[in-house]
Image: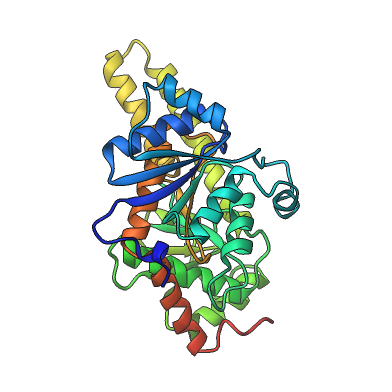
Length: 347
C-alpha cells in the first residue's frame, strides 16, 4: 500500500483540488476549497493557473497555512478527447493533480472538470486495479435513497458482463466501507424483474452474477431505487448517465413547478424550504461527488455545475475515502472475484 492510500496517521489528509475544472472555475472551486480547509481536517493543494487562483484566494479574504497553490498550465474541457488532450496538455491541472497523487504528495484528488479527463489521467498515470479492464464512476446519487449505490454513472457506455461484475464488486466495497452495509444486496438494472427480461448484456451478466460470491438478488427495475430491494444497482454507463441526468432535470422541474404553483399560497420561507428540499433529494451527487471505482488511488469527481458547497462536499468525500481505505477495499473485492476466475471471462 502506498503512503497516499494509507494516509498519514495523525496528520491531515492532503487533497489536491483541480482548481481549473468545472463550469464556474476557478472562482467556485477555490471558494469551496477554502471552506473545506476551514471546516475539515484537510490540507488543500490548489492546482491551477497561479495568477488566477491566487486572485480568487485574495478575493475570498486570503488563504491559510493549510492551503497551498501548485501551478499548472491550461485545463482539459469536456469537448476534448480525454486521452489526446492528456498528450497535448501534459501540464493541465487535472494531470498535475494526478501526478501529485502518484508521487505521494497528495492522498486524494478532487476535480469538478471533465470526467473523461480525470478517468484517463487516473488510468494512465495510476493504473487500474488488478483484474479490471476499465474504471467507472459510482456512489449514491438520490437523496431519497442515500444508501443505494448506482454504478456505472456514465463512464463506460458499452460494457461486457465481466466488466459489470467488476463494477458490482466495487459497488459492494463502497457500500460496505462508506455506508456500513455489511452484506450489500446487488441487483442488475433491467426492464423487468424476471430472469428472462433484458437485453443480451443483462442476460450474460445475470449468469455471471449468479455464479459469483456476490449477494445477488436478481434483476431490479427503475422503481426499485425507492423500494429497498437492492443496495447496489448495476448498469452500463449509457443507462446510468441518462438516469442521473433525468433525476437532476426532474428535480429542477419539480422545484420550479412547486415554486410557481404555491407562490402566495404558503409563507415564502416555507416555500423556499420546500423547494430546497426537493432539489436536494434529487441531486445528492452535486453535494458530495463520487469516487472513481477501479483506479489505483483516490480520485473524486464532482458535478461540473456544483456550487462551493458541492466542492467542499466532494473534498469531504475524498477525505472519507482515504481514511476508510476505500481503494484497499476495492482491491480486496476484485481479488475475491479473480480467485473465482470470473473476471477473466471476456466473452
